Amino acid sequence: MRYSALSILFNGLRGNKGWAPAWRDPAPKPHYDVVIVGGGGHGLATAYYLAKEFGVTNVAVLEKGYLGSGNIGRNTTIIRSNYLLPGNNPFYELSMKLWEGLEQDFNFNAMVSQRGVLNLFHSDAQRDAYTRRGNAMRLHGVDAELLDRQAVRRKLPFLDFDNARFPVMGGLFQPRGGTVRHDAVAWGYARGADSRGVDIITQCEVTGIRRENGRVTGVETSRGFIGCGKLALAAAGNSTVVADMAGLRLPIESHVLQAFVSEGLKPFIDNVVTFGAGHFYVSQSDKGGLVFGGDIDGYNSYAQRGNLATVEHVAEAGLAMIPSLSRVRYLRSWGGVMDMSMDGSPIIDRTHIDNLYLNAGWCYGGFKATPASGFCYAHLIARNTLHQTARAFRLDRFASGYAIDEKGVGAQPNLH
Image 1: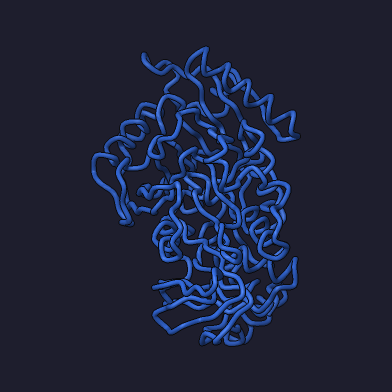
Image 2: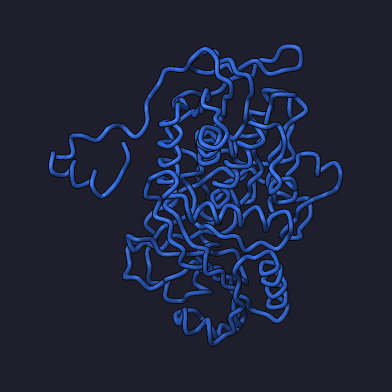
């Protein structure tokens, strides 16, 4: 069923009894051309683009929980393409362009809100770094504006501009950045993939990967063996666990990242704002809650929850930037398992096993990359060649020394 104003009116008049399920609940078939492990944003987007762009429809997406139970539903919904390095900049800009047409593309309201992303700076050195980043963005055709102190004050008067330690001196603004409803992204891609013949199989945990003569022949699951011609891993924070089933050791670590939402408030934050003197980012949802987050907890974990020390750390950074938050109450928090790579950038590549493909290592960039990741991963699976935009994300770059270290902190995953 195609959603439209007419279909809403028609079904409203009939008591909303004519809606069909958004996607099927099929039993797994014995064999698929492609099996994708992971029913999150990247796995669903990959299946959608495989079917839509490359005509590969005999595809199964396997999810061990319910659809969207992983990081796709456990993030702060921010999208942006304000990256410095050549490997990242064109990729995330491709993702931004796909975000801009996504709702029309898969006929689902994902609540894409291009409200702008503002990165504050608090020192001359930081201003110079953001000037360099902004110039790199503009050279690649990406929108960027360097705002001075007065311009930021006009836009966000509630910031602590005269903080003795962290005075706000200006910011780098990307007007096209913003937020998207995270779970709606999963639902839209699932509905689009399902309508093109993809089987989305939930409550189906992969417990083993079967190999014969150097090739993957299928996966052992909690719902039986499923054969495949190609196996694509998109398991986010559990990438190392799944890859280990195929004897593949990955250059990534798993860490928990917490996110938070406050009680509902009257609208006062129009943009996404990030603190330049600490890792804190905040936006306001349509329900009025402030959605915010900060650093990962810093230790290896597979738990979808975090510790109170990080809660305190995030609150301190938020108050340093917006003192009025001291009167705001936390409503709830949640955690996502992040696969942190050695250089802070992702991996989209074939592995040394001929028909095994890898999508992992997204660090903080996973949600915003969802459309481009799915498109480029689908291109790789369908054509066995890396998409031009994702060629920097090769797995062998760690051996060859071609790191994409956007933050410049070296090979220490918990610092990215």
